[in-house]
Image (cartoon, rainbow, N blue to C red; front, side):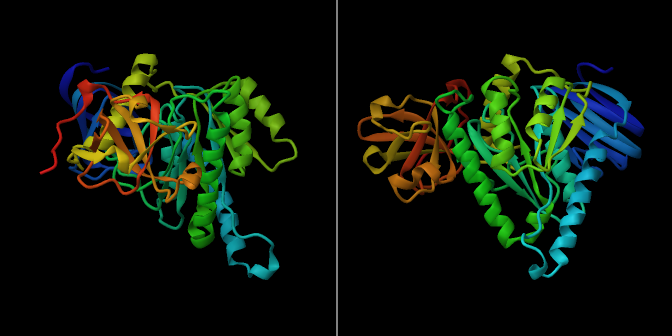
Length: 414
């Protein structure tokens, strides 16, 4: 076990190096072959990370250089992810056969696996989803729709979102989804309540419909299938939502992460009469256990990354100014029109692609801003790039904010 700010070399052979960066750090593959979340590392390339856990998997042998403030531990390789991938790939192979059969001989088009990944917090759901997406697209035959419905710990877009990344090749190891243009619907809260449950499920349904449209026009996505990450909430309303999502996304495979036998049994009962395969993914002992403060910090960092970018792909945050009369402030959850006095400074807002107030409830979004100062005539906002707001409808979150201490340096209008 290594601790502190340091430089360390590791020689791996059919093993896994689990690294937890307490601050900023990097990994360099010096020799051999290794992967992170199923994506291969390139030799002599510096991969930068910050405050996260990274599994470096070596199936043969390699040498890895690690730098920064971290803890690291070498363990045996696990075949759990590969086993799940192999089963899903069989479903893709079956869908490919159907796609090759003339349409008059079957009623439906090809449909690959549609996977729902469930489990409590800190059971490895996000890591598993990312690895399965990378493995599915490794030979570039398939495309995969990777959906993150976790509004509290969103991994693809800003917190409060339901986001879909359409994957055709490996997800960049350290840039993640920051260089992609995902399909995003903005829920606007960190949790789902009894009163907001319908809105949440409606946005999931819009997401499913959009994916279906892509699959109709691009068969490689229909065959590759869908992978859905979920909230780490498996009791009460959270459990009810999981059952709803099985129907919303026409799920064919459910992966239960961790050792929640009660959840697995309820899902098994819920699947009676449906063609659903239930799979198990054991909780990984290497996972860093995040408490409430770490989850809150992670949420803020995810939001900040949207505006600042990464070390590999930095952005230039911009302070824009617009007339209050030119926009509509809408409560993201209720869609009620807000006056400028009702908008709190530092609130996160999503710019809707809607062309009218009537259709804003089902429109995806163009991007995010942070509302800095709001006055009677003007308001200022933080944007990841310079330019005017593309649409006037701003979905404002009442619970997701960027602290003043985290607002990055920005350029101002000339």
